[in-house]
Length: 287
Image 1 (cartoon, rainbow, N blue to C red):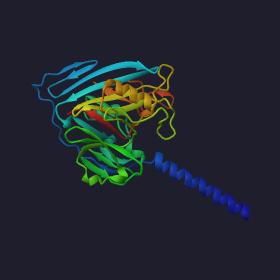
Image 2 (image 1 turned 135 degrees about the horizontal axis):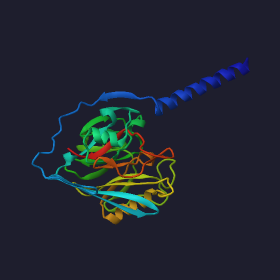
Image 3 (image 1 turned 90 degrees about the horizontal axis):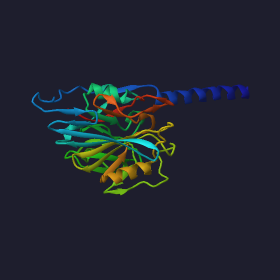
């Protein structure tokens, strides 16, 4: 009889563990569908210059360059905008929720983005601040979490969630992944810094600032024979060489993707195969 109880308990534990894993990583839950606001479009009189590695109109200028360092292909978008309203975030399927995902390229096209990168993948977390396009969606604190806030005038700052009242922050955007790579021009990670249990070298995504309204969106390839990938410190070194003042690490690995002028520019690696991984959200430049 004792042996039977042990078997029943073991089966129950397995079933519970399976449910928790499914609930965490597979089951999607919609909390709020975001109503599409009528966005300002480009005026017909606006002069647009659009090339493979360049975009410019009256309000936005983007220069895309590629480089190779640390045996890795790196893609750098230099972004200048006239107003912070042109830097935005978007949810997959226009829905704030858990495990609701879509491809970076799909979300970008749905929002007519000119440039986009994957965001912070908030949707796999139960806790942690979520603030997008000036709207607070989640206020629960994740301990020891340092977030990036993009202020309404376009400057960057970093906050610690367990030391911050989100309602007291006037932010245009908040991104919660990390760690902080560069602060006031100085590298804030070391050669041993990692994100949880990740590999040292990975595909990476980061966002950085020279000054308000002048940014860098950076993505690197990785996990392939052509591109090894970057450590956090290597990524910070690349950004410091560019001269940025502030830089923040976003979700990487299979999520890392850079979209520009209608297509994915880098080579995302998802579960050992080339191709995008679905994500919860993006950061983009557009109208």
